[in-house]
Every structure is written in structure tokens, then in C-alpha cells.
Image (cartoon, rainbow, N blue to C red; front, side):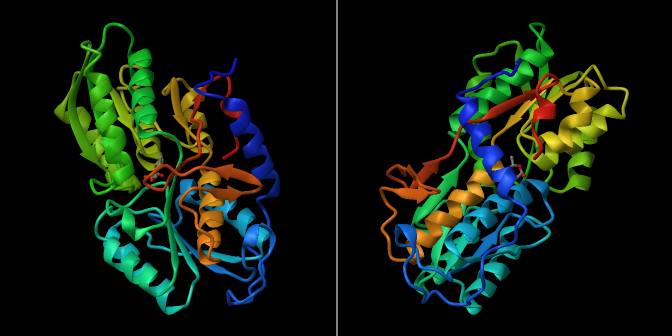
Length: 344
Ligand code: RAM
């Protein structure tokens, strides 16, 4: 039976729609934003750059699937551009490239919450609509809206719940294997994990390490954690790259069955580790919704619509909070019973 965190039916229905429509390419390339306003006042022919923390990363490719669907619907061109390494310095080059190439909008997941800000402000001065998705910037004036999966609090709390259930009442030492130390999303979740861990005296957080969303480094960090903490009972990895690396490492080691792994992962990458029992449960949300709503928000802003109190995507209204944050929700937990139902 499917375990529900919030109201999973909505997410599954939305996901099914997106998956069904996701294989087409981005919309028409008219190269300018001068087209007449279409439905919802969005100009046709907008050019929008989607800048993930890094390219060739299945999580961001899944998000871009939703972005392309939105671009098809609004007759925009959207391109996913970005670095292979998730750093702010590398992303800055792509932001500058988008400015030079006359994009109308940038939808970005910030690898570094601070260092991309000056370039994003330059983009705004060049009349480019800037929206963050997945990972925000610290200076929120550098973007018009932020599309976030669900509340950071909930994401933090659930990861502690999953590791606590996997380890059992005996408890023990746990460690966190994160992405980059500069990523605002992971840092916010870790903050809430610590608050939640304080309610679990049986669990002791002994280390927090950073694999920078790099598979090799994340694997090395998982191995080093085991060396440094031979009594470790669990690894929480709030990154799709980190959790896949940690699960693979534990799966192939003598720690299998002794050390639990959980966090945020893609069902497609985690399936073998759930099926063979290395991972009992983990979670995520539908990444494609972040790209989908991100494109609509950027397109509305680029078309002159005020998105401070409402973003409309695919006929549905989302209300940003006072800081411009749109919560997509809800999260989904994956386990042996339901993992085959999810394709992303
Ligand atoms: C990785 C990235 C991304 C995060 C997911 C859960 O793919 O760090 O920012 O949201 O994990």
C-alpha cells in the first residue's frame, strides 16, 4: 500500500499528465518576445533559459521535462544551459551568456545562494525575468519568484523520520551526506533535520559532509564516513546524487544491512537499492512541476504581469508567500511496495 505524506493523489495525477506530454521538444523559436499576448497575457515567442545547478543530472533533466511542456503550451523556446559542475562561479558564466544572447527569462536553481546574485541582478537590469526553482538565492530581490517543492521544514522532518524508522528504536550514530555547502535548499533542510533530531535522543548526529552533487566525491565521502565512524547506523543524504552514491557504496560493502541509507532520490536511480533491501524508504517530489511552474512564472513576468500575488500555470493558480515563494508540494515517500509506480 502506498504511504502518503500529504495528498499524494494530486501529485500522481499531475505527474501522469506531465509524463504523458513530456517527450516533445521545446516550443517554436521565433527568437523574440514581440509576439501578441496569448492566453493568460503571456507573450508568444519568449526565449527562456533554464539553468540547473548542473547539466547531465537526472533530477534536473526531470525538472526540464516540465519546463519543456510549459514552453510548448505558451509557444516559448526554452533551453537548458549550465555547467557540468554545480558551482556558482560556473553558473555565473551561463547567466552572463543568457544576458548576451537576449533571453527574456532565466529560471535557475542556484548552486551557490550568494555568488550568482550579482549576475542575476545584471540580468534583471537587462529586463530579463528571473525566477529560481529548486534552490533559492539568499538575496531574494535578485529574483521575482521561487518555485520550491514543499516546505523545507517538512523535507527536514521526513528525512529524520525515515532514518529513525529504518534504524529502529535502538538508534545510534547518523551522518548527513549533503550536496554543496553553498546550496540554500540542502542547508535549509539540514537545519530542520537538526531541530527534528533533537527530538530523537536515540539518534546522534556525528558528522555532516559535502559531496558537491558529484558522484565520485559523494562516494568517497560515504566511504570516509564509514572509516571515521565505524559504529555509524545511518546516512541521510538530501540530494539525489548523494543518496544514489551512498546507496551504491553501502550496497557493495560489508556495511549492507548494518547501515541504513535514506534521503531524497529519484525512484529510477534508487529502484535496485530498494528492491534489494539496502534502502527501506526515501522520498522526493515531482521535479517536473518545478520546471513547469518556473517557466510560467518567468513568462508571466517577462510579459509584464505582476506575479507577486499569483502565478498561473496550466490553468491553476499558485499563491506566492510574502517572499515570493511558491510551494508546489506534496512530497512522496518511496518504498518496496510503490517504487515501481514511479518512472522519473
Ligand atoms: C540534487 C540537487 C537538487 C536537490 C535534489 C533533491 O539533485 O542538489 O538541488 O533538490 O538533489
